[in-house]
Length: 405
Image 1 (cartoon, rainbow, N blue to C red):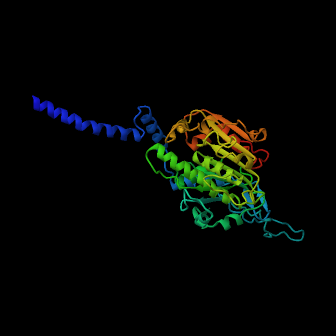
Image 2 (cartoon, one colour):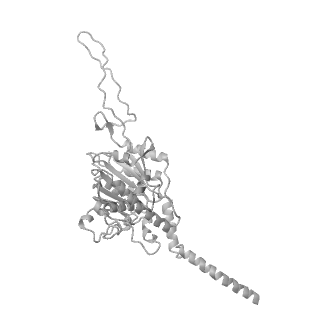
C-alpha cells in the first residue's frame, strides 16, 4: 500500500510541470479563454466561404459588360445609338429600280453604306505587386511591378509606360484594390462586377490592383497583423503609380476590406504624410487632383482621419470619400480583437469614421452609406441598392438623358 502511494505521489509530481507548461502554451496561443476560441473559428469560417472564380465566369462577366457599352463608329467619330442584334455585319448593298423616260431598264445601284459599327471592348488593366517587397517598399522595387492589359480574352504583358501612354484627357479611371485572401481571378471578377455598377457613358478604364493576399496563417491574429502591414505598405506603391497619372484624369479608388486600407495609406502619402518611415519625394507633384475614394467594408481604424490619426492626410487629397458602414458585418465585428495585445479601435466599415478634430470642410467630403446585413463579401455589398445607386451617380462619369437605372 505504501509503495502504491509513493508511485502516485511521483506521478503527480511529474504531471504538474507538464500540466503547467501545457497551460502556458495554450494561453500563448490565444486559446486560454473560452470566449476567444469561438471567435477564431467564426473568423476562419468567414474567410473560407470565399469561392474561386473560373475563367468561364470571368469571360461571361466581361462579355455582359461589353454588351452594355454603346457601339462605336470610327466613320462618324463618336458613339452611335443603334439597335443591337446578334450580328454586327453591315447591311448588304441593295438594288434600286430606276426608270428612264426613253426606255425602262434595271440599273443596279449601291445604296449609301451605313456607318461602320464595331463592338467596343472592355478597357481592363491589371497592376500586380506580388513580386515586390511586402514590408520594405522602395523606389527601386517599382522596376518589379507587373502590368497587363486584357485583350482578346487574355492578359497581354505591358509596362507602366504603356499604361500612362494610353491615357486621354478627362478619362475616367477606376482603380479596384481587393481584400484579403483573394486570387487574381477573383479580383478580376470582383472588379468587373464593380464596373457594371456605373453608366456605360463614357467607357471607364478599370485597373485591378493585385497584391499578395494569399493565406499566411490559419490563426486570425497572425493573419490580420501580417496582412494589415502588407496593405499599409501597398499604399506606397499605389501613391507612386498615381503620381504618374494625368492631372485632368477623373480617378475613383475603390477598395474592399484591406484594400480600403491601402487606399487611405496611398492618399496619406500623396498628401505629404508618412508611414513606417516611408515618404514620397515631392508627394503632390504631378498628382491628379480629381480623386475620389469608395471604401467598401473598410478594415482599418475608425480613428484614421482624426488629427494625428494613422492616415490623417488622406482627407486632404480626396475630393470625396464614400464609406459603407455595416453594423452586422461578421468579420469587421471581430476587428478590435485582432491585436496581439490590447484592443484595437473599431473598424471604420463597422462603426463609421470618427470625426472629432476634423475641419468642417473635410467632414463635408465624407458620405456614409448605412447598411445592416450579415456579410463581408464584396458581392453582397455591391448588391445593396444604396451602394449601387451611389456608385452610379458618382461624379466619375456623366449620366446621359434616359440612362437612369
